[in-house]
Image (tube, helix red, strand yellow):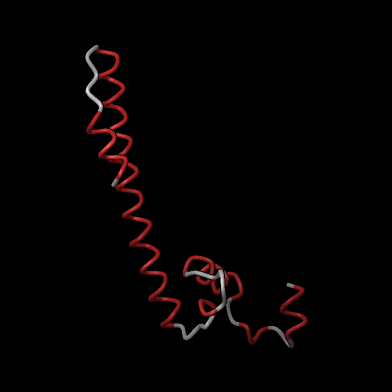
Length: 89
């Protein structure tokens, strides 16, 4: 990761600079952890959407998160009498 390399090259001499570097390193570690969680959750959603038999992710711009959210919001599509009623919803 480029940010880690940049942070590693910073060698502050005063206490304020050392404190800022330590805080930046902690924040970077937190961001890396959150990114890993997001990737894991996205992969899980992808598996669930595919298991449902949905082809939403075949549409350009629709990824696992949007597809899962759409499926969750819509529920059983058979509850709509026709596509116009679905679209109006």
